[in-house]
Amino acid sequence: MIDQTRKKSGATLIKSAINSFYESRNNHPFGVGIFVGSFIGILASYNLLLLELSSSKLEENIPLTTTITDGLPKNPDKQILRGYACSSETECLKEEVAIFIGSINKQSSKLFNDFLDDNTDITTICLGSPGGEVKYAKIMSNRITNSDLFTCMAEYFKPKDEAYSTKKSDGCLSSCNQLMLASKKRLRVGVNINFSGHAYAIDSDHKGRIFGTEYKLSTSRVTNNSVFINTLNEANTPDKMQHIKYANSVSNISHFNGMKLLNIKELLEYRIFTHECIDECVVLEVPPIKVF
Image 1 (tube, rainbow, N blue to C red):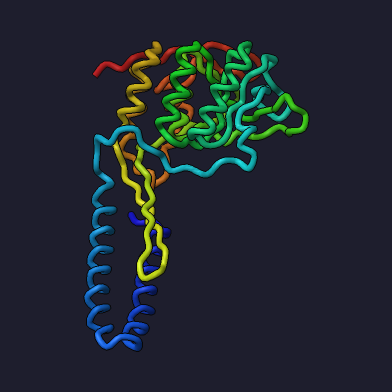
Image 2 (cartoon, rainbow, N blue to C red; image 1 turned 120 degrees about the horizontal axis):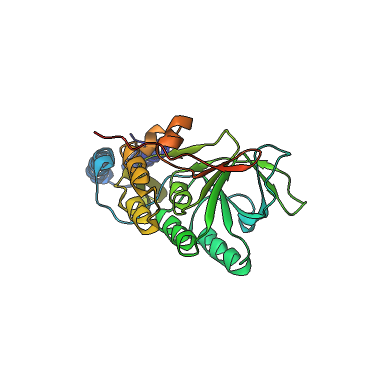
């Protein structure tokens, strides 16, 4: 599937080429011949690029990749802060947690580690992220595993700083899944939780200039889930096999086609959470292992 950005870039190239055609015809005795040859070359190259973009979606074995996500919040310095996990706008757990929101990238992974270095009393990280760059999700996941931190998802987040209001969580999507499953103790605070995933992808931009006009082509292709599987193996939780099963279940869902949102039954089947917290936290019963 070719997105609208690429289509628009192609239209811009062709429009630029047509304009140059008329300039060449009027300003140079051999302009038409020179331009026609160049124009054919441009069209051939562009068609080859479209063919590559279309076929590369199934390419595998690409290391450390990037998922397609939204940009950073307007105030990226507030991506992680102290607060409370809540099952409603007024019902919150008493223990302070770290709240991480927004995209995962180089800057936010540094903020994440710096925050934990400065707040050593924090034991639980609550996640509300659309995902982001997998290599930085891996760094953050390693910190959760190595520091033996708990993870959580909540319906609402209440920042400790009263300058910020209670916020409904956006869920834990895409590469945020790595962070959630990097812990041996994983809390679900509330009922309506958005835990969604899809295949990983590599995303890149190509910039250039043709006939004085700058262009940008954005490409994206599906890759394998080896980084996710490595994270789960390193976390080595008692629920590792269920988590690997989940990772494999979304590995063929193209990021062009949305994400798989787990329902309550699937959250239990894949053992996404170990504890459920509504009025109080209780240990979730381990589902029986199916024998095939």
